[in-house]
Length: 445
Image (cartoon, rainbow, N blue to C red; front, side):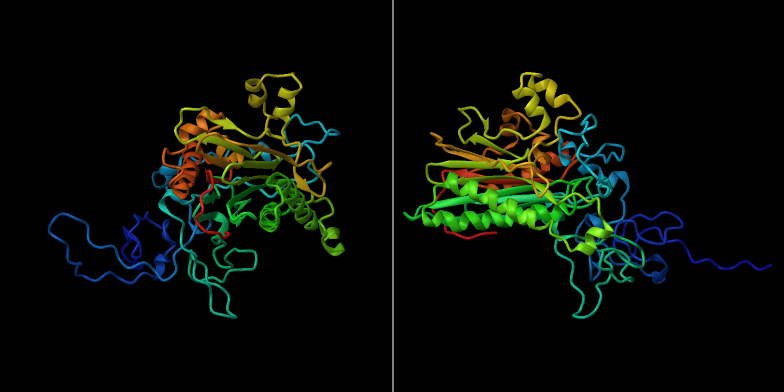
């Protein structure tokens, strides 16, 4: 019996030089098809003589943009982003409280289990910069998978050959205007980013500037939470940009913007009858919303849900302050005098929300407040994906860089990184607005 000749095993990937294990068919880092790897030539590339490694090979034509396109990497490769604990439970902020249902486990008010949110996939570090978008396929042709580079991408976003999820644009987003910046990241455990934001600037009737930031957090146990957050952010931002130049007081404009956002989310529930027949028990799309408007001398905030606004003085001589009150089980317990804050937020039901935007909300109650700070500062608008790791105002102030007023985008990146270093259990979105607003132009993003 003759022995069949076996090709020599590759020790590193021919594409990216990632170390390989015996029997690997695909590279664990870039997805290169190893069985198609050419036989290495006998000669070796020239090495520099100062001990540095040789220049890395040219990257393949299509690189994966985001974490959904990457195979699971060894622990050492993802250690910079923290451990991924698949046994952790779903975020409690993704549930809504119903008075008629027992809320012991923090998942009350749900008619159907949501799409799973806990996937042990590595994600890019936002502090390294936003990843480039993958090249789109030729017009009329299916996109090629960024992992195996062989299969076509199905309409659901997965490769028909290897089944790999393709990158999504919303996995990591960064926007910057002259006077405001925002960053949103999928985090370490969620399989998609259900947060959304909108930032813009407008001119008041007297020509002075107004800066707007809206941050929305989709309710994961509802249907299409990513669509709900995006629709709410767009509608609220558009409402504010339309109202402020016409002289509407910023606090009234914020109230109207929340109503407009609620209408936009409610409209998503108007599905065709055929769709409801296939999924009769789905909850209506839902999200929370928090926003801020900064002018030359006024700071206005508005919210529904448990996303927050923090005030951090530039000189740090005054105290940092949280400017919003959560619509949550914990906040209700504290307000009723049944628990102190430490006890309430230690409870597993703490983050179950009692207010949200959506067709199945009890009654829309927009909260608004206005402030006139007596010194320069920074306004931090964020989802609980951040404040879970800096809950107290003093903790948030410690996480905000000292130069946040001059570098809002850098500060937003640092704050998202702070959440990821803390565990990145949830989607993370934060907007940073210097106060007072400076005349630096107008626009939106």
